[in-house]
Amino acid sequence: MSEDALALDLRGVGKSFGALEVLRDLELAVRPGEFAAVIGPSGSGKSTLFDIVSGLETPTSGEVRTDGQVAYMPQKDLLFPWRTVLDNTALGLEAQGVRRKEARRRADALFPAFGLDGFQSSYPFQLSGGMRQRAALLRTVVLERPVLLLDEPFGALDSLTRTEMQLWLADMWQRYQWTVVLVTHDIREAVLLADTVHVLSPRPASVAERIEVPLPRPRGVDALTEPEFAAVERLVLDALQNRAVR
Ligand SMILES: Nc1ncnc2c1ncn2[C@@H]1O[C@H](COP(=O)(O)OP(=O)(O)OP(=O)(O)O)[C@@H](O)[C@H]1O
Ligand SMILES: [Mg+2]
Image 1 (cartoon, rainbow, N blue to C red):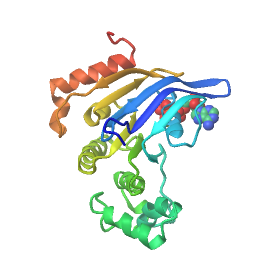
Image 2: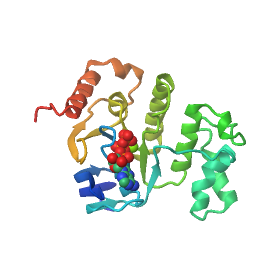
Image 3: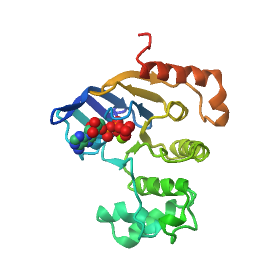
Image 4: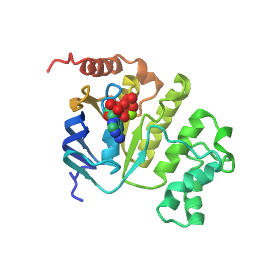
């Protein structure tokens, strides 16, 4: 891999389901180690975009290049209620042919960092909503693929838990140097976490604006009330409302 190789490179991607055109000429480039956020209206095609990147769907036109395999945490990543948390998190590795014992060992090693230590033998109903999301994320991360696709991982959480999870993810991203593409509806979440925010147009979606987030890291709760933070939020909001000065 050359130094300037991209972790993810989408060129002119289009996707239609029959007569419904969902994506049109979509361009998205993500560098290794970058945290990219994709924000857009509901139904604009964000999950479809991830389905294409992960190979679940084929694009109707254009090109998708990834540097190795991607790990995809879908919008509704349900844990199996009849499996323990450890068995749930080892599932992806087992599906890839890793022996059960080894899969469990590798998943187990991540439990402390994910704030789940001691809950290996619990069942999903015994966890809080935030813990369930971390377990689902652990199941994705343990695959050790270079690119993580996270589709609204915190969508169902209350705002306090959500903020805690965002700060935790930012910390984990710095620690593990993942390449992350995060789909979200939440402008604040995008600005808090991302290096770049890609704003989608309504369907058929393309990237209407690519906004850099020049805020220093680490970004803690204090960053949320800085005027610089509000200024970037405003840029994203304007882009979403298609009023940005070009
Ligand atoms: N397999 C499919 N077959 C037909 N239509 C589909 C399929 N998958 C998605 N669509 C349609 O494509 C459009 C985009 O759906 P998608 O789930 O990608 O939106 P989204 O941006 O993720 O929305 P949300 O923010 O609500 O999650 C929708 O109109 C949806 O009905
Ligand atoms: Mg979606």
